[in-house]
Image (cartoon, rainbow, N blue to C red):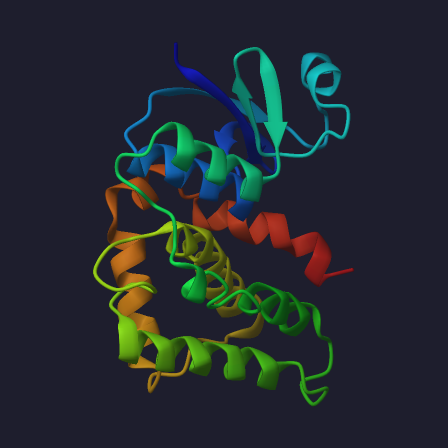
Length: 212
């Protein structure tokens, strides 16, 4: 029986896959494990009644397993790795938190209205730390094989790339070559190509937060 997964629909285009990085993380895990699944696109501005009945919090992503709906991308990817162990995607514990502060520092910088408020530096520091880690251990976070931490970082790095280029005319510094190689590797994976939101919908998703 195919699994069912509910993920964000695009802003203004409810029939198209949306820009939620946590939804994409779950889809990437399903694709990397070659698990068949049925996808429900949820318009977060007008959530369907059935969705709120099974998931009163109304958050995405959620995964349906044996008539129960499971929320939280962290919980879902651990469950999928245990239930479908081939290929194994668990990240060695010493590498599990690599890059974990990048998304938060990206959001602070993206929303910042004052270019001198110091929000750029923490993002640069986090990207440099990732670059140093990849230089020592790459090409992926835990070496030669993709693991869960890469599938969590890939959508976040995609949002960072698209949104900062659009709203701030900002790109990852060229000297962080290992980060550039890493994002190219991730974005080129078949699983990523199949599950990414189009750039216009990433921009549409961030616009209200940037303009708030």
